[in-house]
Image 1 (cartoon, rainbow, N blue to C red):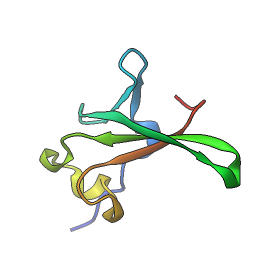
Image 2: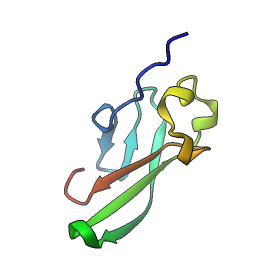
Image 3: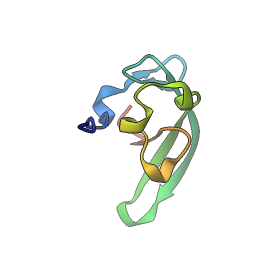
Image 4: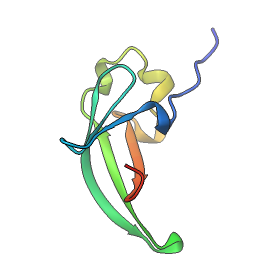
Length: 79
């Protein structure tokens, strides 16, 4: 079988009212934390999928390093 291409960040829609992202399958990624990336002089925000284990596209979406749930990294100004 051919492995599907993972969703890109652009496939996730930002919900300004709730400060979270909505994935293409309508699951929510909630704000987890932010940190300062010194090498690029920017603040990064990290959002975590809450229920990725139940998603039919988990295998093609979640990176192996994330294991359980999708993590979405965004710059402070990218929302």
